[in-house]
Amino acid sequence: MQIRIFETKEEIAAAAADVYAGLLAKKPDAVLGFATGASPLPTYAELIRRCEAGAISFKDVKTFNLDEYCGLPADDENSYRTFMFRNLFSQIDIRPENAHLLDGNAPDEEAEARRYDRMIEEAGGVDLQLLGIGTNGHIGFNEPGESFTKSTFVVQLAESTIRSNSIYFKDGNMPTSAVTMGIGSIFAARKIILIATGEKKAEAIRKTVCGDITPRCPASILQLHPDTVLLLDKAAAALLGEEERSRV
Ligand code: F6R
Image (cartoon, rainbow, N blue to C red; front, side):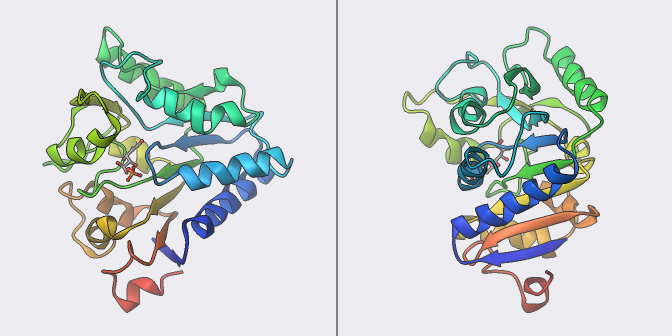
């Protein structure tokens, strides 16, 4: 696990965008795994800027998002589909039909999960997966639990996740379940970037990097991944020791 610590969110965004640029130069039809939330927003802004400048193109990529709330209309203000089209897809040259998100309203959730796993497999697997991390160590919506999850599944959201994310639901009606790629699906990505900023993430980052590898901190599995880089600000890295900080 590589660890890089930056002064600002903009520096993190530039470092992340450099990874996209490097990959897309080699493989213009790469398969990209995207996340929602606050953590990736500066990176998305930087990808948009580079795309507008002609430095990077998404015209041949396929994308798969990590997760989606259950029970929200697809065009709801708070759906992850809305988030991705608003904050990235509508502003880059991706073909909309190549941007895949889970259907949180599928009548048969199990069939929807299998359909998504199959599509990822048929696309050749994810080349580059972008992750944020929950204060409880979740990645995607893989909440702390007793065992690591494998493939896409429907999850009951943890209390801590509902607390963190309910700020976005002005009417107070935050969904309590979601459909998410499993830990196995995330781990299968050939390269992973995890972005964390702010002191609220410091303990989750400490457990991810230095703690036991346990489903009680789902992100800790990344210790075993062959190509994961953590892009952190100083606040998120505050509880790491000297040895971890020098893992560049
Ligand atoms: C979102 C996702 C979540 C978030 C995490 C951190 O698609 O999968 O795991 O990455 O909850 O969210 P932020 O970045 O808002 O702190």
